[in-house]
Image (cartoon, rainbow, N blue to C red; front, side):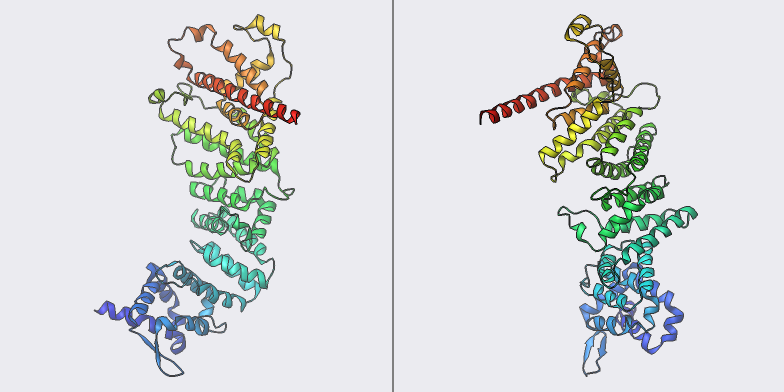
Length: 502
C-alpha cells in the first residue's frame, strides 16, 4: 500500500513544486529529472492517475479535476513559461516528454509536439540551434520529436536546419577525433539523422521538413561525413553512417558538387575491405550489417553515376581472393553438390553475389522504365567490353585453332579475367538479360576461352571436373545465358520486322 500511495500523490506533488518551492526544484533538479526519466516512471505515474483519478487539482474557477486532465494546462502555463524555472532545463524536459510521446499507453503524441513548438518559438535562433544539437546528440530516438520541431523552426528561421547540421557534424567529428565517449556518441548522432529521413515506398521522405537542407549538406560534405565512420572500429557505427548517406540521396538531382571519383574510390575500398575481412576471418555475420547498408548505397548511386560504375568495375577486376590452402569454390548451379562447399566457399559466393548486385539492383526498382534499364545494362557491358584490345581474328582462324588454341589476344585476356573473377560473369549475365544489343562479343570470347580450357591436358586428366568447380559453374551459366540472349535477339528481330511491315 505504501508504494501505491507514493505513486498516487507523487505526480501532483512534483507538478506543484515549481510554484510552491522553486528553490527546492533548483537544488534537486538532477535527482528529480533522473527519477522521472529512468524506467518511464513519469509515464507510469501519469497512467495511474488517468486510470484512477485519485489525485485532484482545485481549479481557479472552482471545482476540481484530475492531475492527468490538468497535465496539458500545466505544460502550457508552467512547464513552458519562457521566464519560468523549468524552461531553464528545457532540454531535460524535452527528453522526458519525447519518451512520453513514444509511450503508446499514454496517448500524448498529439499534445507534446505542440507544447514544445510553443516553447521553441519563444526562444532565439541561437537557443533553438543549441536545443536541436543537444537533442540529436543526446537522445536515443529523436525522430518523432525533431521532425515536429524542424517544421516550426524552419518556418520562423528559414535555413536553420543547415546550421544545425553543420553544428551536429562538427560535434560528431570532434567526438570522433577525441574519442569522447567511445563510439556511442557518434552512433547516436548517425542513428537520429538516419531515422529523420528514412525511406518510404511513396517517397514521402522528400517532403519531410529539413530534407532539402540535409541533402544539400551531404552533397557538399559527403567526403567529410564518409571519413567520419568509414574506418570506425564499431561495425554498428559504419552501418549507420552508410544508411545516413543512402537516406540523403546525395547523388540525385544536381550532383555537380559531389566528387564522384573520390567518393567512388572510398566506397569501393571500404567494400572490398569488408569482403576480404569476412572471407579471411570467417566474419560472415559480423560484417553483414555493414555490407547490407553499403550494398544499398552503392547499388542506388551506381544506377545513375557512370563514373562510379567505371570505378566499381576497375575495383572488381583488381580484387581477387587472398592466398589460402585452396582456391575458393563458386558453385551454385548444381544443388546436389552444395554439401561439398565449406564455410569460406559460402562466404565467397555471397561476396560475389553482393558485388554483382551493385550493378543489377536497378532492375528491381519501379522508377526505371524497361528502356532505361536496357540503357544502363548496355552502358555497363559496353564499358566492360572496351577494357580489352579490340583486335579480333577471322572465322577461318578460329576453325584452324580450336579446340586447342585461341587465335585472338582479346579472347585470351577476357577469358583469363572472367576465369579469375566470376563476379564479372554475374554482371554480364544480369546486364545482358536487360540489354538487347551488348554483351554478344564478350560471350563469344568467354565461349572460345572455355572451349580451349576444357581441352587443356591438365584439365582433361583431372580425376573430376569438380577440381575446377568455379569454371564448371561459369560454363553452365554461359550455356544458359547464350540461350537467353539468343531468345532476346530473336524477339527483338521479330519486333523490328513487325515495325517494318507497318
